[in-house]
Length: 171
Image (tube, rainbow, N blue to C red; front, side):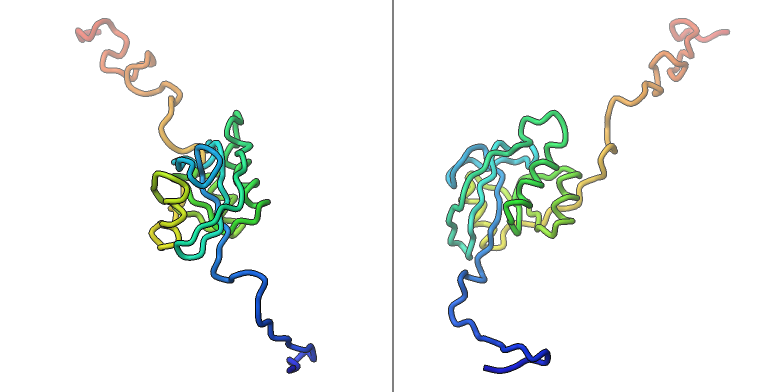
């Protein structure tokens, strides 16, 4: 036994209680179980299957229903908080919304995008390092939408006719 600088005994652990190469990951799924179809969305995925991955060796830990799957809003945040509470180190899905991406990345959880038919396929792909890190999602509220109607031709003089008849010109 050796003492470190603080005077505390250093004990060497011969058999750690877990394999340090095994990672606990969550995969978005359409149903429970390791053979369930993979879900391409994160926040609205019906289930999350939590698996232990060590290389291509995959074992199911448990399946949990997504509390945000049918929520009217904040589905991604609810799903992210559920997985943070489960203690996963990585999440695999087809896509992540901006809020879920922000919550998970601030919690230090790895986000990966991968494709596959079943949860088992995706987990094995992750074990082979075939999944890619998820790109940052655009901030919420930016994108295409209905707008305020001030574009061309919406009755506010923005069209070619300027509201003076059927486009025949003249004053």
